[in-house]
Image (cartoon, rainbow, N blue to C red; front, side, top):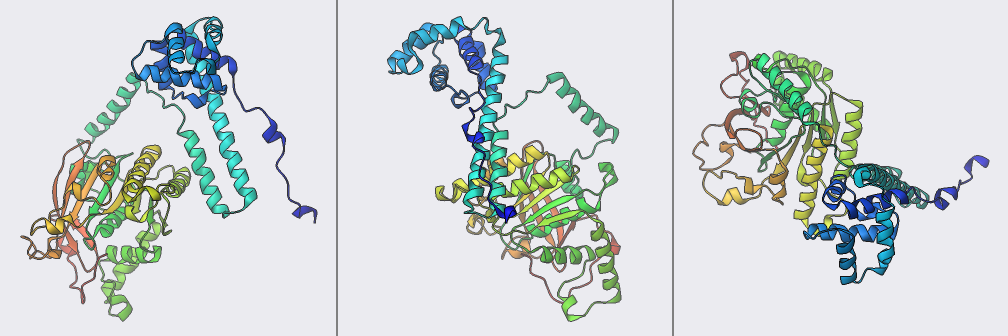
Length: 483
């Protein structure tokens, strides 16, 4: 059938000369030889690198110039020529005649910015062509699934995007923007500047979850970190538990990557938590009329919430970023991204370097995602066993973050969660509801200890001293085990 005939790649796509401008490359190099102190810094600012030059001789010359700059050597026609002779690469760049030609062909170094922008733009176009050609070849070989090729292609385009020079903001405009944010806080007479967690004490320290922040919530197993994260998701998505002191708070969409629990288990947990009903009662049919009514009300509220759940197991961090980027494009008001949990992620290409290096790459990618999307990213993480061997209270520390010190380095906020009742001989183990959150790191604010209540039977955290009498729990028939 004609419709099934394979279409071969157009030869014109491979026979064409890649985008480049020899004149602009000469202009950059000539400008450097005439005014090195200014033009070399300008090239570094615009992320011009040796491979940005199409002509091999130009790329080699720029590589030598950068090396001289890093060594603090003077750069002009004579010093560059001498350096090339010393390292035996003089003829590689065309000898003295080529250097003189570069200087003579440059009318003035004042146009160096214009030349550099052209060189960088052509380099981006060539890089994009290379990435697209690789994707086309993968499609024809068909050795991978379409989803895998699509994710790799999107990641490859992202890598090209990261080659773009970061724009330096106009300082007066930046000051004005921040002053506007300060004015808004003053008009509210204080309060949060980010997304409210729904917990008064936590918001007082963090001032809400800030855009572009990477927030790590870490604990040993069975301390309730998933429960706390999902309680925060519920508050953000439904607009619940907002103190009027923290300004207007409307329901906002939340994206959850659940690498451990299925989406059905996550929904069951959220319904029971919001309704304050023990899950074990439901299969046995022991629900009272009041409990059934609370479940119906919880389902109604959660149905209206905008919570997007991805429960793909063994997710690769590049694929996670790709999926988050697509959601952010469709949800411009995305308020929060939650990842449960960091140690379940993988980083393609870094597995052989050891778990520490792989974890460092994962945490760096998550921080980059938060900055790119300008959304707070709450990431759950395991702690090592060190607290269990430290003292009877087993107090966790930042150094206990599992697998890599890069997690602590990349994080803007680190929350260490502990429940004394789970620790034998703890000074406060008799308080079955006490949960302790240590704000151990806060890059832009205060740290401190927060004491909260945790209702184990419905897996719900609450502010310790503010819960109303009408919210007193019904005694559970059987204790639940938090994961």
